[in-house]
Image (tube, rainbow, N blue to C red; front, top):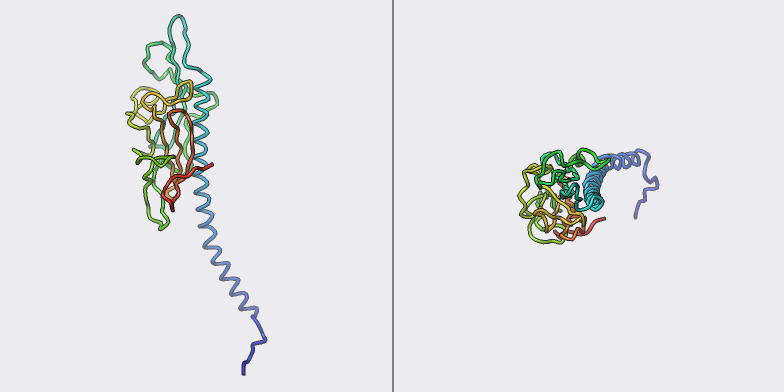
Amino acid sequence: MIVQNKHGITLVELMVVVAIIAILAMLAIPEFLSLMSSETKVKAAAKQLMDDLKLAQNEAAAQGAGSIVNGVLRRRKVFVVFNTATNAYQIFRYEDTDGNNVRIAAEATNPAGWAAAKILPNRVTFSRTYQDNNRNTATVNKGACGNGVVPAGFVDLGNQTPPNTPPCNNMPCLALNSMGFPIDGTAGGGSFYLSNGKDAFAVAINSAGLIRMCQWDKGATQWVDSH
């Protein structure tokens, strides 16, 4: 003979269940939101860098390759200088005002409306590290964004030795001509890696000036296009 409990769930039992659910939510939701916020920040930073590289290309096209003043050729370029120590980058317009093809600080200026330096968001750095699906720290081992050879660094400009002249001043330096193409030792383009320690993104510019943004797929361990 089966005895059925016709009383159902008591109010106290229901309150205990609700309390347990509330506690679990309090523990899980902040971590979830933190992860989402962290990924959003590094993705937004990569998107901003991509947009800024396009701005640099527009600046290069707007000022042209150079001009002749009093019979002297004044060469023009645009530089994007990366300060990996401070996780910042900066755009400079350059004009060889004295025509001697020697860069000095006075010949490099910021475009109108451009901040002195663009600093990456808090906890976002120039880096190739990420957290794999087992929560172990790993390093991106394929070049952005076409899964090429292992990158030389988190600001990868090929075999370029950072110029010691302004505006580069021994820092990684992407130079663009009036077509928006990389020049001055970075003719093959460049790749720039950003991470929050968990997620990795990258921005790449090729020799023809095409700029792409990609995200590291932890499961497939390869780059996928991101927008």
